[in-house]
Amino acid sequence: MGVAASKVSGTDVVNRMKAMPCDDDAFGPGRIREDGRKLCPSYLFEVKTPAESKAPWDYYKLLQTTPAEEAFRPLNEGGCNLVKA
Image (cartoon, rainbow, N blue to C red; front, side, top):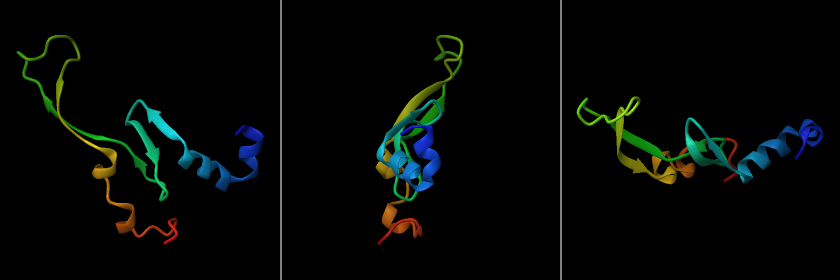
């Protein structure tokens, strides 16, 4: 989109962000939903016992992953004014 075009319209920037997939170090892959919420998988971890830990920083084991679409309140239940019914 470029800097010049993004300065012209904030609405165009937001629409472009919502159209693109995103991936970040903190929350992983996902997308920005129509109401502005970032959807990403949610993870349930358990802290490992010292015997289970095999290396430095090996503290957690993944127990369950909830898909992004199931991890957050459905769009139609949010009541967001940004979403046109």
